[in-house]
Length: 428
Image (cartoon, rainbow, N blue to C red):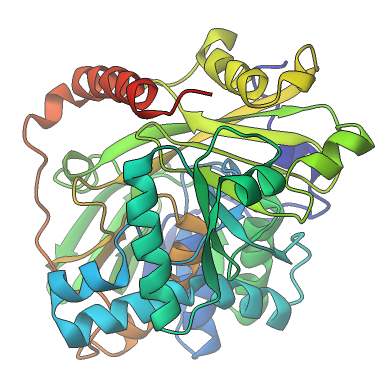
């Protein structure tokens, strides 16, 4: 496996957008820092509404998690509808779960409207249930969503084994609102759509300083270029930096790694997620997998908190494949890649407004494709209509306790969670 072999880069049919680094000075209505799903979605929706938007990114489009994830479109949030209504009250809680429940549909509709060639397919998300305790929660989740009209179900061990091709789970939560896509094709498609709509995009233009001057904002790049804007959307998510120092201290920017096998044989394809389903499970240290359009098995999971490097950082994913599917022992792995996800301790995405005209949406808790795309539209409306009541309450940025020790703490926590997973999984 080549260290830098990202499957999505190698297989996308979509050419990267043709942009230049920002040079000189520029004036715009809205500056967007970060060309991921949320930033590009916001730029697209702003441009369609007639608002001038400029997007700057440190690297190329798709260089962050938007081009380096598992391609699973999962609706909802970590919290179930009843929990959201208890946390936020009946009215706002209902608005949040309705919004979250429709995020996959938002992606399907947007991709169709802009004819994005991103391998988008509508299929079920299967959440593998690893313990009897997790099964109780999954049954409640299914009941809550069914009561609200969603096409979901809880299935027992036999049906879970039939769908997944492994007998490791005691059951499964099946959400038929979900889907999959080719992440690099999708993010590049969003970039092209935003450019066609009139947005401006400059890659390789890292913003080093952001300063409020009177009622305007001024951003300076590493190359000495400047952008003056009425408002700023900071859409850097897990790649947030010292540009807003409190922000990276408010999240755990965990690495999510993936590996891919060579294409499976026809019998193996028929045995593993043969309906095109995508899967993640309920373990504390999550596993997730799917087949791509060529029949490769893509296995994902958590990585080290530091930047991954040697092949051994992905070794646990190879072992998971062999554990789940003994028939695949010895299969060749051809690709490995990874990106960072922003996690909050309470498993909820956030919307911050630390200063007038500075909007900071952050966190997706593993639902990035759908949630970030839909939130792009939401913050685009908020920046156009400052009095708009957004789907998330605006909250202050709260630093995680002992933030400087996250690297040590996260590694120790993952080790403890792996042990807990082994102790709670039923014997096979």
